[in-house]
Every structure is written in structure tokens, then in C-alpha cells.
Amino acid sequence: MKHLKTHLQVTTRLLAIASVISAIAAGPALAQKAALVKNTDEPGRVPYEANAVFTTATCESGCSNFLSNGTSVLFDLPAVPAGKRLIIKSVSGLLPSSGPGHVIAFQTAHTLSLQFKWIFWGPFYDDFGAVGFSVQNTFITYGPGESPHVAVSLPNPVNGVDASVAVEGYLIDATN
Image (tube, rainbow, N blue to C red; front, side, top):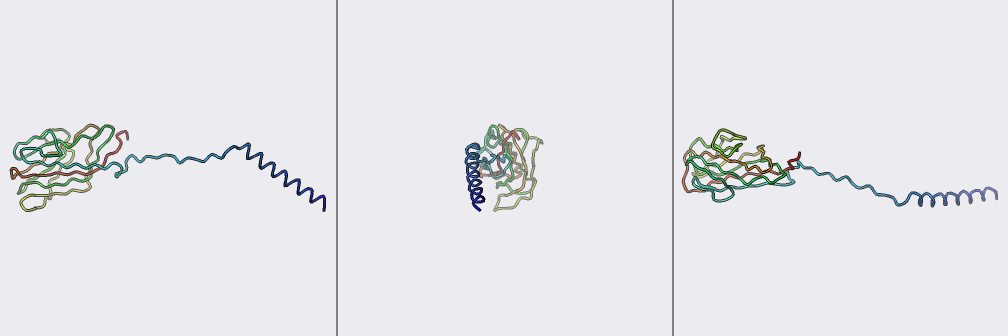
């Protein structure tokens, strides 16, 4: 019995010494760091919104490079920042005009032509002498440094009355 007791004490001491040696030899425990992940295509990451207010004669705010021939206008929205790509997901507006023939288009170039990225022929709704529109789930893209070119056809314009076009979307990294 005495022999068993001595054996247990020696074994316990050896285990304690082995634990201390292994703790010293292993060094401090290194915690793993989480991998940093960047979801560059997440729609809500960098939201984008632009609102242009204009008449058939001039741009009042939010637009540049304004051209008009009396029944059609063309203007640019602010340029896409360097290193980003713009994804336009909705377009809406109010146009001071009546009758059929309204068109709103996003173009590939700043010219009154048929170079469309996206075009909307209607339906438009009547709003007390003006026509309105709202289009959700669009997919219009512009690259770094590009300005969205917007063309609007107003078949029976009410001169001197403000019109507006608003776009919403988001910016993603252009390197993808």
C-alpha cells in the first residue's frame, strides 16, 4: 500500500512538471483573427441619389450640360466618382406636359440621338396638368468618371414650369 501511495505521488508530480514545461514551451496562446471581408457589391453600402430640376429653357439645380430644342431636353447628372461604378435602381419624376408621347431615356452619350442605355415610354400618370412617373427595379450602369446622360421628351410642354427627374441607386467598386 505504501508503494502504491508513493507511486501516485510521483506520478502526480511528474504530470505537474510536464504541464509546466509544456506551457512554457508552447508560449502564449495566439488568438486567431477573423478574416476581413469586404462585400463590394452590397447595394446599401454606398447609396446614390440625384435630383435634377429644370424647365424647357434651363437647368435649375442638380444637372449640367443642359440642351433643349423646346420639346426635348438633355442634361447630365453628377459624374460617378473615380474608382466607383453607379447602379441606378429607380427613376421617378414629374414633367410639366400633357398628352401622349412622353419619353425619358438614359443615353450612352450626351447627344439627342437614339443611343439608349434605358428608355421609358410609360405609363405616366396625370397629376393636375403634369405627368408623373416612377419606375422601380431598373438596372442602368455608368462607370468611373461618366456622367449619366438623361434625355426627356415633352410633347406639349408648359413653358417656365419646373420639371424634375430623380434617380436612386448605389455605388460599387469599379475594380470588380
